[in-house]
Length: 504
Length: 41
Image (cartoon, rainbow over all chains, first blue to last red; front, side, top):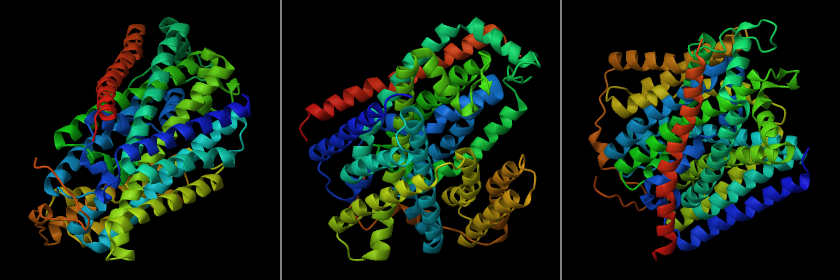
């Protein structure tokens, strides 16, 4: 175990750096109103958004989970993780571009839902949106807590709570702009660790050595990792894993206000498209493949597996890092990647929650006559309250399986996505059909999870029902129920705070 | 079963893919940040 003092040094060093940056950003770009606070005045250049989107979608599981997928499914593991988690962005990108075109002054997705389906449905989406954010942020805190506790021996509760406090401090201080600037620093740290580590691993083990090791895994029944499909890119189990990743990630992308805030903070729709395509397809998509191959496949090829070198398959990534760099440096580099990945994803969530509460909640439910100054003040306070809540939740979730939580979250958050998508593109879907689809999908998914006794399939059936059953309800319901929505009225929508948009 | 050549191209190709993505973001990001720091608002 590396000295705990070093762990504290990393925590406090980065706390000073990131909070310091947020103060500098707030000084250089004083916050002039709600729109400036939650979507950075819609003026951020594409490269900064691309970096921010990339690191926001790099979770602790993108590194550790994809490495584990490499161990479970061999050469197809990382690839299946990658396409599965990328597809929701190919739904999100055209959707948010469409939103900017049809409702130019929208800031949050719940504003759109309110105009499209009415305030009752909007409240349901608000609850789902906050739920996604709290869940994802908490999961990052747990991941960082485990990593710091494991490597440095820092008490779990402190290691999970402190990073959440750091993120809370810089988002509360400088809003979305502060978050994006910190994301760029974290983008460089994560990328540089990977850019140096990958060739080192490949040079050390050699493609020939890895290949021979993997052939043994696929053909030798005595190999502890024996898997006949380990060298197949079309492994059926791997494909199932990819499909499940699509369902789980769909709600996590479409209901996370953080991605909408970043998309809306770009200068133009063209800039949005460029930022999200580069951030996801070019920069993010290769990361899980690299993690799956360089960490997972290498561990397999070396003949290391549970009970032989590591205790759990989730230890593949730290195991290879220690092997390549030696215990101390390898552990520190690994923790840095996990720390940055967790903080950026958490920051994205918190910035999203801040936008939802500042724009949607305060003026509608707390103070109808509030000035923008009061909205900003509330936005800061609620950010701190949410950060503290997440910190406590992360402490309480010690020892809970993150993988199980992740799969369960797919059932909860996939159900509203069909109603949302239909509302965006199809005038015939009514509020009643939207609500029915959400609860039918959610009910069926939960029933499958709790009632199917076979633990090998209940999660898969539950996730599939939660995503696809609402789609069927929406399609059938929209044909049966006579309803027509006038999309033109979205164009004239104006929120309660000052918004300036350029003509596109 | 994939061949050794495929595996080499797959592993190194993904690395080059990531490097390209990194450069596509890093170069303009550095230019933008420099511009923001040294330009008066």
